[in-house]
Length: 401
Image 1 (cartoon, rainbow, N blue to C red):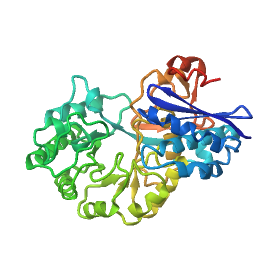
Image 2 (image 1 turned 180 degrees about the vertical axis):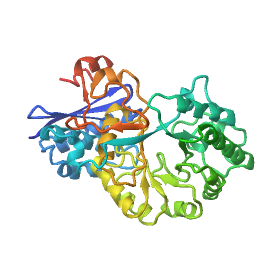
Image 3 (image 1 turned 90 degrees about the vertical axis):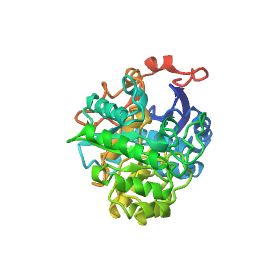
Image 4 (image 1 turned 135 degrees about the horizontal axis):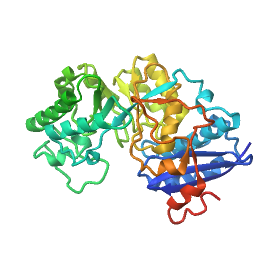
């Protein structure tokens, strides 16, 4: 079997990848939204993989791994890897998890990030707003029991609360969040009050994480972690470095982690296992959160999970914007991970029409915060060309040809 073509189209700001073969088997994958700018990076890898056997996933990956980098530039390489596993599974008439070593669980737990804009009537960054956030989470279809709240430097709180920190507020700042600095006492107390409100509202049977940065000075990160120890958070995420940071700083994280019982988490921006080595082996954090759409693919994230398990570190894979194809990939690889898996982040940020243009999921697959691991070949989700064509952007009309 040989790869004959690699195509990339944009559907609802999300790059979708199609790899075809000379035996008529197609592999699908998706890059998290909104990253339409990654499309040229995907297409420039075409000549590197055409003519290769897609079932030899690692051999193909050795040809293109050098072309990736920290988030967002590992996404093109990662998505190609997902599509290769989709083809390999279909060729073997087996789910991808079986090729990755086999599943160790029949259901995978998932957590839900709650976004300010999705709460009916809004949810401002106040204790009352966080109460509404938590109430909204408990009402969601799927009966999620684990949540994550974007807060502090990973939200508009830095703008909405006057004098939140000793730094310049950039009112027109683009994503990602560029704010960083020492927090004021008032800003710190306000943040703790908001987190406490959400936790108290959730009550028994639920738990939450806080996505807080990056942007914290290390001392503030430690103060926050110690101030909320009694709340038993799942974790505090990306305080010092993280989302879109082109570096890790494990030595700084270590100074925070080793002085609090609140779990400290980072890792969604990291590309490849080599960049996790020091973070894991120095026990710089308690929880890592690699994203299979950024770290280098499914085999890569499984390697990271197993290495973390050897060192007593938990894993909670990132995936908030990975789309329906990314959801399929997360389920497959998380089914194979060791017992240090907490849960993966449910890709909630895709429009309902994706269920209409794909086959594999008949509506939202979460029940009681869990997803059954499917046995469909490959990743288990395919695009329906007839339905998906209407959502293609100008210039992508030949994507399915």
